Picture 1 (cartoon, one colour):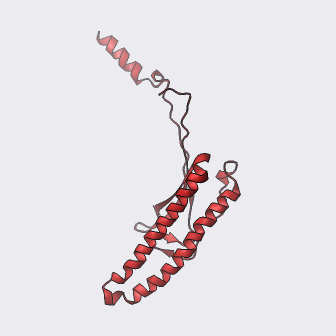
Picture 2: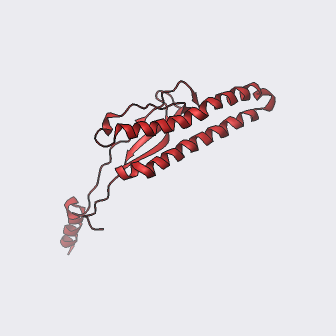
Picture 3: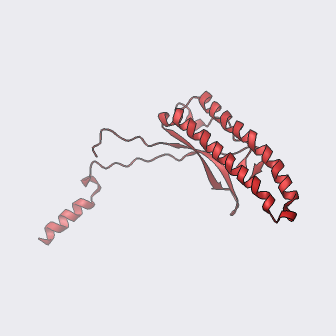
Length: 166
């Protein structure tokens, strides 16, 4: 009796015992870093519009360029005006005990949400159909512990195999 139980347990531990299970490995996301000359609160004033070689054959360079132009337009409209507000806030910071910096922080949050909204529209219109998902993400800056920056991540969506039963 004990031998039968051990044989059943050994069969269940065998990976070939469950033939329907298959694991798909998703590739690492493509990271697009900011290249602008102005960075406020981790958000750069511009992202690189160079077409990544890992997207060749999967996405048209024109579509990638159009998306990057839309994102950079949102950043161009907002980040440079934030610099003026930051300078004004720094001038009056001593008098207001730091309260004068709050408008810049809220403007920056608005810019981040505008970029995320633009990316969501692009995902719905084109990229989700092609198996990609764009998102704005915060990652640590290389060689530092406390600093973070915003980058664009292009993730590959896992396709669900329709021929495998549930």
